[in-house]
Image (tube, rainbow, N blue to C red):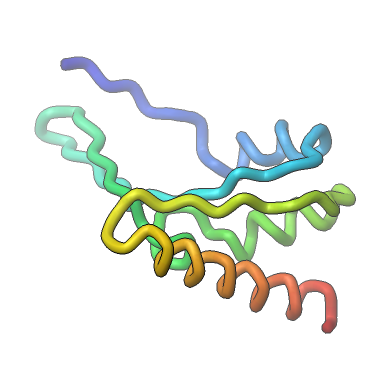
Length: 99
């Protein structure tokens, strides 16, 4: 199997966010094995994964994003993890928006 690296999430967001009015969010643990060149991923709660959502939301607000978020998670109790993700987003937004 041949795996190729993907563009860094910040660069992807910089390209996408100015055109975004809805954001389906999820996160992953990500690891790279230099011996084989393989990348491995597994679902993660938003606050624990590869993407720094504090930074991502800061970037989104800077370009005027005001749309809804849809949270997703595949592992464990999906409803509980989705609620954790929702609460995490609310905490970030409260700080970033000064609420």
